Length: 377
Ligand SMILES: [Zn+2]
Image (cartoon, rainbow, N blue to C red):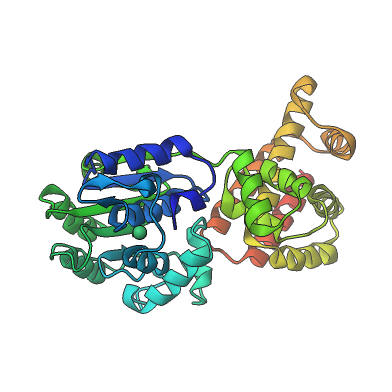
């Protein structure tokens, strides 16, 4: 992964490149960005850049100084993530799978696309069952120990920790010890989505780099150039994905009927209630891609919030048109405000469980039955 392979983010890339050029590489850095952002890709490009052999000759920068060369022995190994001086810590699906065993799968996952979510990764491992993702304590500890040894080939030894949020106190503490007395020429890159879940002691010892979400233009560029999507479709998807490249790729790969039609059918079946159809819809829902399943609930939340506004006379705030507007008008007459509030709660709770890998089909059917009951209130 080179900087130029990552869409947009020019200022941020320049800042990272500059820190290497002027020899101000902080030994512990926190790449903080949302799901589907460039945080992991940038960590990879940065590590590649730092250890590129063609970047400078005897301390003098070469023509390649604005990116790694992509050709030297170090870059070639970095592209495959097999460099002996790069170490990885990442979550595994359960305590049974070790980081070492999953390393080849992890490399494959990264090479396919480094913009994906924890859920994507856990699914990619092919391990079935209820997966949360854990960082194995003992193994993380061993890897951290290994990093204190001298580099084999490169100038820097680099440890990339993906999802450090999932480290337990014990592994976080062994990392902390190392961050307090860092070995020379060692770089720790913590790649996280949510800093609230990190120990403050870790936060205070890292230099935080905020990775903004991709812009719509970045997403459109990525989809058209790397995935061969036509501009019109790329534009729609960019709008829906809000800078989340993982979501954008999933949406592009899913050619379903429009969200509103499906949602309206669902709500009408719950209102009747038509249990047989609700069961059928739960099956359909189960077959949707994960991002689309979540998207449907988010869409529902927006619609019910609009319903509430409508009922409270804030019609002007509701920015809907066409069928969606008719839907809100009709349902606002039929459903009580208290029921809407309860439904909003149900929807966000289901979203919460879905994110934590609950079974989509069961969650959806439960939700449908609850909504049907609330409509009757
Ligand atoms: Zn190179």
